[in-house]
Image (cartoon, rainbow, N blue to C red; front, side, top):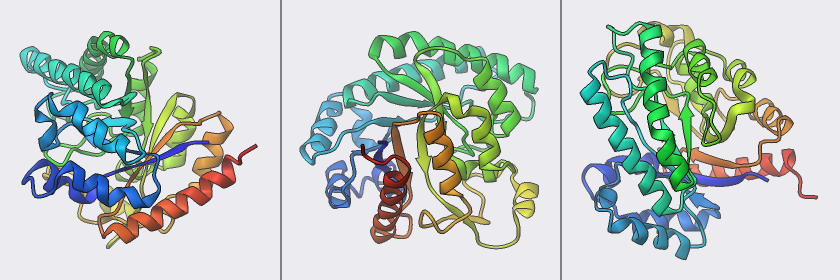
Length: 296
């Protein structure tokens, strides 16, 4: 049966920018939700010092959970080889961070969709960069997970491999025991794709999943596709909401994953409207998981 984790989506500013929340406070907030784990982010202020990595792990484990996944945002599409090398070294540090935290999975991204890059050039660059990180991942017992991502909060351009065809082309070029896909159904909407079409293409490569739900604040998905350009931050038309009440078809998603033998971590990206919303999402997902992965 898949295990359930949560990512502190609502508290990124407090944990990563202004320090107004401690990791211990996040653990204490999340503990009553009955989760199996907490997904951490490489940019959390307390994790800047490697001495704190084992401390952070102990805090979570003392609350009866583990840290299964580390979320990172390497910008691998840098045209400048020197800047690419800096991103590779950062990712290697995050892989070591993941291992020390007890995480078996560490995210990789393709980087920003820079206007000067052709798809062919970008694919060559990104594949080489991810391959450069795989020996470190193998050494640390960590699997690199490529997410069908929309855009890091602090990037100017959306993800290079945001669109289904580019993402699948990238995944098709990477085959290694320590590489897999982190499937995020909500992000497919932002790419102008159907999440189920994407899942059909990569279902055999999915090793972890981000669970969230999005709903339109205004307009249509077509309006959204027209305007995703070079603005910092996320699209304004689409909002995170309680899981099970948005655009995603979790019955179709879970039946597909169950059909290919998926039995791993699902991490919730939710709770932007408060902890009660996050608790409701946990209840929804627990019920769905027990339906599609019944205990024998």
